[in-house]
Image (cartoon, rainbow, N blue to C red; front, side):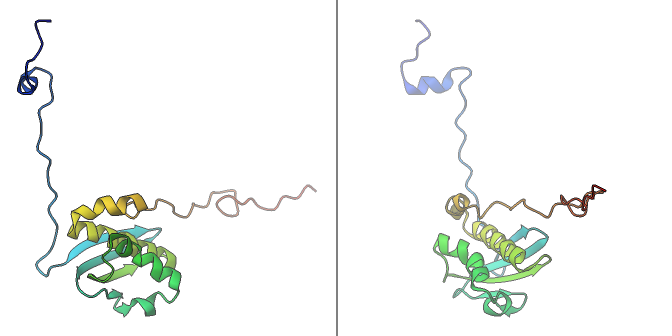
Length: 160
């Protein structure tokens, strides 16, 4: 055993040992107005979301969230990332969303808020990722196939 090392410093000089690389810190992405941006998508809906420090006000397409998303479930969906991150009353949210229906739009806004929060505070990624807020939901409407009435439904079968 002539090839043994006597100290930890010698281990770094051995061939084949991976070199220690410094951990790259992620910088916040904040524009000149102090806002962070995130794009959210769900089904056919696309949401462009800006967050800035404020009192917790949420504006969607120029309207208050209570007006745009009248159902409480939809308001709960868009507030989830802010609540889980513990920032519900710290940020104002301005979003423009188009396409799909109300549920798809709410999911897109939630995705956009999550991305904007991570752009503003990169440390929140570890908090939001386990809840699935950072992942784009891949479920979309299945296409219609030829020879079928809908995506999977067949035409009515008549034996005679």
